[in-house]
Image (cartoon, rainbow, N blue to C red; front, top):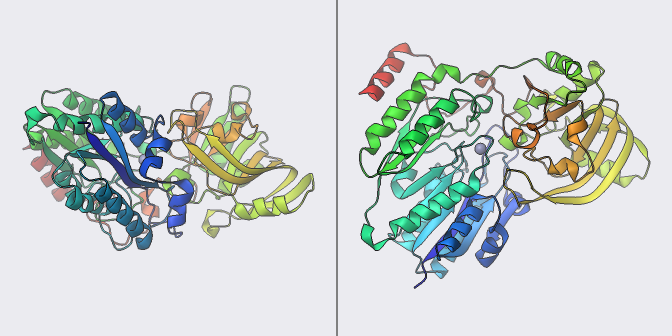
Length: 501
Ligand SMILES: [Zn+2]
């Protein structure tokens, strides 16, 4: 009889500092699939469930679509949005019984009003319906994992890359582990799971996979995975902007034996590196001064760290546009989320226009930037990602207006666009490779788009909801103490001693 594995999940990296909540419409706009449409839409894509579907088919198992909803990072998810998706996910699972296993795509840093641990709640609700079958789940590198999730799942598989490019492989790994647990020889035996939570906060610009300290931490995790009897091992730096009781770095291990001491050893490694998680930033003026030095060699990527769209900031901050203007730079490319300016541009037919660009979400993120020049208009633009991030995924940019201003090409979009590929620019006939500078509203993930041809990278201290300096954030209910916000030498020694023993 064919083994049937249910697929589903609800996925978002929530930024609790962003005032705008995440609604059900935001999930519908990005990704919301149910039943057979889930499998048809995600098969062959570079997503977690895409990888899981391929792995199931290779092993003659049947993937059964339940419900998968994903939204771009934004503010806290409204409870009714989460509850209505969870209700349908559970109802679809009930309608498909009996299932032999589940593979779920969860983010791990979703924050829902009134639901303190939404990912654990999803698994608990499904477990009540599907019974004692293997449940595997994938987690983002930025997951803030709580204590419950490792206990109620059989296997957790975290991304190992940042920029994230290994989603399909991790989905395949979760599927393979679930199918392995179904072998008659295992007779319901499961590996032991252990989560070691570190009281450590880190910021995205310091979490890149090929840079220290993460490189050596990921190498150590890889060595653990190669040990006999180890099913899964993850080092998950977490997401500092998703405030919840689960904030902080986590180390996870699933192994036949000695899961706890092995996880503690890896956690001790992370703890010893805690001072290496700091980000170096330039002022906007110093950053734009660097553009002239690389002219002719390729674009300088000006990383607008705090207005990271992929981290839940609005993407309409103007600090770098003003700095480019003041320095007299031309030939730059910038993408700004600005539905109001798009509407203004589309309402008129003039070849040249003056638009007040960006700066609408929060006065702290810079005043609107006056751009004047030739305008091109595009009807709703949709493109397929062809790069290493979620390849094959369709993205809707909404209507677009492109204005050629003195500083260069400014792309105004109706929907927020994350710079995880350069397809969004090439879809408009723009060649970012030829730009003098690229304003990238991201921390590290933009490297999947532009790193191949960037001549230089400058991380800039800008205003926004994803600052690299944690003291810019006004936390209300986070756990404490958390390094580096609290320095408590006696306590730090105690933690270190505990991890060593
Ligand atoms: Zn992430």
